[in-house]
Image (tube, rainbow, N blue to C red; front, top):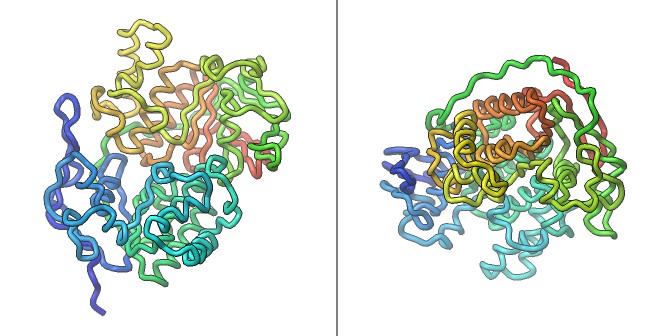
Length: 469
């Protein structure tokens, strides 16, 4: 049977918008590629190698919503992406971004999934049928009545996927779809995508660093670029046990978003110590991110107490607590505000009135350590890739010099080299007496750096184990 090309890329060259200092990198040059209908393509490559940029060429965001320079041609379903608008392309190509919040607009789950259908004028009866089908296929029936602001990162990602699949596109693009999911959720997602591919002939293109999790899902693999930075491999050494008083502790903490809701956290009694890396693990919705948000007062217990360095944080403001507790959230964009990367790192020293010249030297050392120096300190953090933004946010956390460092899913968008670099950074912080807490689905990263693993399930601590060195 003759294969039908559904994507044809000819002599594609893309140049990023010019950065301060004249840097204008090219992620790919004279790229030629044909993708056939029904293929399941895996795009691999290190952070910043151009994978996400390529997806944006396929769905028309480049060149229609981008100030970079594109040469060559991209045809999708026989349509040159330069010849039609984004709304026309959207009927052929659906995309799920690395950060689901980029494409979530509504207050509740059903409204979010229905949003695109409403824009196309689909009848209410047809909408209900499609929404019911996709909610069932993605196994998110339990989310149907939920408000979006109560969902975990992984749950919001599944809603974003549902909102795209409900449109029945011919081509589905997914940028790091597994990054925020536990292993069982990854398997469920891949089963659903494979079923859609086989039943409907859906062409699926995925970028992903967790290649092993994909198993036999890809029918073809395409590698992009060369490593943008390098780091030394981490050699684990036995960690010193911590016998001093807890730097952060939770005492019989219960929490519900609304008085009528069931508890998201149930009777959490847990302590964290300086000189130790504690990794929080658990399935999507197990309570990891909710627990973290209690550490600096963003959320307050329905009952129970939270202590920082032995002091109850009840009555203390988030700003006051932040001098002791620094958090790097899943969504790096929410923590990046400045025009340049260097200014981003200097934000806290400026607020605290520290001398800027020593702070600049420290910032440059941190940028070097996390592999961001090649970007240029005068570059805009918002022009960086998702993985690079994550490292910028982590760098700002290192600049805060708090005794307690908390990172929520810090390996999202990071390649293996970047993960080893990050593990080395966290181990160095631990060895200098920091309390390091990491919430992650990434078991390989936990194995790389954890001194202790705490597992949550349905808002409860179900396991608390040390790591054999």
